[in-house]
Image (cartoon, rainbow, N blue to C red; front, side):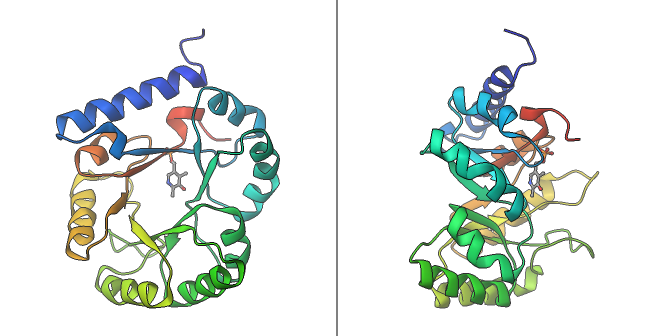
Length: 222
Ligand SMILES: *Cc1c(COP(=O)(O)O)cnc(C)c1O
C-alpha cells in the first residue's frame, strides 16, 4: 500500500477525528466525516467507497447529478450532502438528489425547498449557513438574521439539522467555530457543520458534528 493512497488518508483523518474527540471528552461517533468529492471523478471516489466511506459532499448540483446516480447504483447506501451555494431554481433538483443541504441561508430558498419537499415528499436534513465572519462575498445569513431564518424554516416544515459556516480564510478559525457553536446552543440546534482539511481537528474539539474534508482525502483539486 502506498503511504499516500486514499485509503490511508481516510484512516489518518478518522484517527485524527477520534483523537480530537477524545481530547474534548466527546465520542468519535458523534462526528460525521463528509468526504468532499467536488471536481473528483468517479474513479477517484470509488477507492474511498471501497474503503468503507459512505458520506460524501458536492458543491454543485449539476456536477453531482452527472456523477452520483451511477455511483449510487453500485453503493446504494452512499449518503450525499450538498455543501455549495444553492440557487432557488435548483431547489427541486437538490431535494431529489441530496440527503442533506448545508447552504440554506435565505427566506426565498427556504420557501423553494419547502415547496420541493412538499411535492416530492422527501425531506433532506438542512443546515442553516451563517456568514460567521461577516464577509462581503460569502454565502450565509447574517448572525443577526439567524433567529428569524430558523423560525421561518421551522414554520415551513424544513428540517433544521444544524448550523454550518466557513470561517474567513487565513485567520485562526477557532473563535469562529466557538461562536457558531454558541449560536447553535442559544438557538436549540443540535448539528454543527464546521471544519475542513486544514482545521477539522480544531473544529471537532469545539463541537463539530459534521466535518467537510476534501483535499486531505483526495489531494489537491485541479
Ligand atoms: C471545498 C469545500 C470543503 C472542503 O475543503 P478542503 O479544504 O479541500 O477540505 C469544505 N466545505 C465547503 C463548503 C467546500 O466548498
